[in-house]
Length: 481
Image (cartoon, rainbow, N blue to C red; front, top):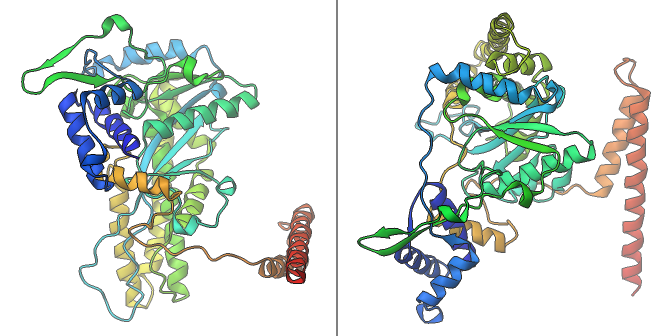
């Protein structure tokens, strides 16, 4: 428990460039020991303990390297030329980009449908991190990764995570970290290995995006002396190299530092389009509640996953391809192509925004004055979505303690916002619902209801019927004994 907390702390502070000293490590260990209720007489933070801790966690003395300076706009043509050479080894369908974005997945609790207005309502900035990825022609949008602030939120407590339309992970700050990012890379490699497809993956140089090609040689290690605290040391960041990760079908390439706003396709409009579709889904959700006069306070993480999955599905191939062309990094793109793609993307975003504004206007134009109040609240919420939302940072001591406690409780620490637990659906209710849907399906005259789809529902009706029979049979056997 203590060792795990210290490991996370070291990982965080060294990622931020902090130089560790022996004294600092010992003092932090005492702080965590107190947080976990470990008495001082149970542990002796001696030099022997320190040496063993550093050995277990691969903390070594080495030179500190500074990050490359800002890349001026003048260097972009040169950087694009380098990327052209790299990307020319692959076809467009083999070139991918992944990136994270922060998302406040809901607005403040919806008090505007109640009988009395609530003044000074505190903003509910429930944030998640969403990782999106796609190839250069938009034909392969990867399954999103969602990072929430709990490993198993209450609305997902009864859900089989394998059945979610996203990969879900959790930590106290809902931030990306190197541990999750390693999972992302390994999952991608497994995915493309099954397809027998080799790809090039472009990523930015965010701290959590460890460089799999980086492995500091031993001859670059050296001592760093501190005049006040004695010998200092810095942990070699847990930067898995290619051989350790064993990536066989994913070649990772880093975009030049400080150029992602110009060269990263997801930042060129793909994420913006995704958020616009999410806004549209959210508007429709709120409009439906308003029309039905339902005073539901807020959507939960499970509903937000459904909305963001739908939003990602609605980002078109054309939008994605135009954003890649817009960056100018595709070898086949001409200046004319870049100009046309930039204009097309601008018009697409304008259309998406107009669609959202139309829904908000419909809400504000209702005879019920609460509609205008709700429309204003949605507009304020959307302004928050437009801001730069962090996707990673250093965890503080309280975050680390909570993370360890959550791991020990198998992720069942209650969230601060106390979202309600999902109601478990009984087999009997499931059977009735499927039967009702089958009857509804059979009564439809529209060609949209395909008979082949009906067979799928009947298949799951039979499976559920069998499960119910087995359940009742088990109960009868138990009662017999």
